[in-house]
Image (tube, rainbow, N blue to C red; front, side):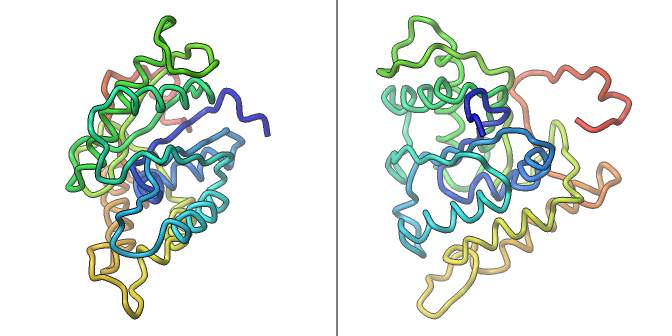
Length: 238
C-alpha cells in the first residue's frame, strides 16, 4: 500500500488512546480501503503497568486488527507534552510526510493532562504544517489538512457528530483487548481505572452515543470548525 496521502492520520499521546476513542471508526473506514495511520507521541514509558516493549507489541497487534497501514512513535516524553516548538515541528513533519486528508487528536477536556496537551500540540502542528516558510528540519513539502477532529478518551461529552460503528464494535473491542498489559488485571499489576472494567465502560459509552442516533453503537467527535455536509444530509454512509 502506498502510504503517501493518507485519508486519516490519528494522533494519540499514548498507544491505546486512538483505539479507545475511534477504533471502530478506523476499522470501518479501513474496511472500504481508506488509508489510515496512527502516530503515538510518547512510548507511554511512565504507565503504571506493562513496559515500553510490551506496549509496542500490543500497539502493532491492535493496528493490524483495525486495518491501520502505518504506526509511528515520536518518542516525546510521557507526562512532558508541554507547549514546545520542537514538539510542534516533529508533529508537523509527520503531517507533511503522510499528507493526510483528515487529522484526529484527543479532545481537550480529559482527566489525563497528556491528552489535552496532545490535542493542543496537534492543533498547532496542523496549522503550521501548511505554512510554506515554516521549517520543520525535514525535506517534506507543506501540506494543508482538510479537517481536524477530536475523539474522546476519558469522557462523555456532547458530540458534534457521530459515526455509526455498530458493525465494527467487535473489532474495536478486539483492538483494545490487544493491550492486555493495560486492560487486564494480572498478578502484580497496579490497580488503575484501566484494569477495572474499562473496555466495558467504553462499550457502554458507545452504546449511549448510538442510542442518540438510533443505532447500536457510535463514536462521538468534536470539531474546531463547522462541518460541511452535502449529500450525507440524506443519511447515507459517510
